[in-house]
Length: 500
Image (cartoon, rainbow, N blue to C red; front, side, top):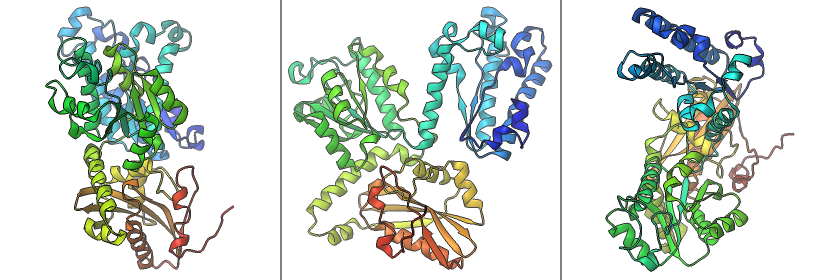
């Protein structure tokens, strides 16, 4: 309730929840706008809107004062039957368009508060359908307006936020080609015979490719695993006039006759990412069932025979959703292609020392500003393998640490002859009396094994010594994925102390 939000001693805050959800119901905030809009003049409408926005801002300000929880805020559903009927659509000041503008104003308020996010109930209602979304019986009996189907759809939306908060969203999309990126079989039908173009059924594959390109531009790594001759696949990628996706969009193209389980394992190794970062899409039940059985960490999407639903099926899962999208995210595909160039250079080098020397690495270490804080938070959420504690932090947490006299936040950037890898390391130090605690120490999997971590750790130790710290503790909290750094501190001279 609103009272729980406004009282600091309420049970809401005593329970210290990870997520707080505020379900805004228009009729409860303004019965006049909801039920009596047609009788209001413009001044009265403006007053009601100001009151609604004021209440939303008051609730969020109170939550932020008393809690660091993530906050999910529902917006308002627009009425399916606006008060002026079809005339409502023609008037910018109508009930329908007033609520549309109100939703934009709510977005503006929510984004001013750290760690607060919009759950677009209006969009969810649109794809579930009004008749299946609203149950007026529930509303009149218990003031709970939504149907069972609506609650399921809303819960799925919450899950997308939870995945992003916990850093368990995916970052690599593995794609089949035949009857996935285009209709037909390239080895049999040839480049002129496959279905791909402006008319059905080729238009459906074109639409699917466009949605995949959107994912690429959001920073999702694209790879191909297809049972085909590679020359045939490259011919389509490079020469078919209606291809949206081209060779340069794919970090790896495995077009061969190996089983896809083996190929996906090799792709993960080549990209130095976990299998749990991958999504595999194929139209073949045989192929997808094999991956499900032998690689359960990989999320699998089996496409049906009808290509017109491909786009919506892939987008509906929200596998790749994140709370922020940085410039580095958008360049991830290029970064991973550059990483493959580093792998090739390493295989050609006569020693590890000569390889490192030939990379011409440059490191920048500093404290994040407001521009870099979202990227620092994102790295804590997504990094698993080289992460000593796997503590997940949101932007508000990182900002709080950065401003605290008892903490320091440091980032590490790296570039080499192949390109700028951006922000790839994060350390968070906490100071208590004469003791420094390395709360978090993590590096992107892309730079594991380069010895950059030693430079970063040494810098953190020097920072602690400059603060007058006499003792430095580095925590290691074991997880399923970070076993490779279990002895990280011991190997660098730290004494082991086991905490019960």
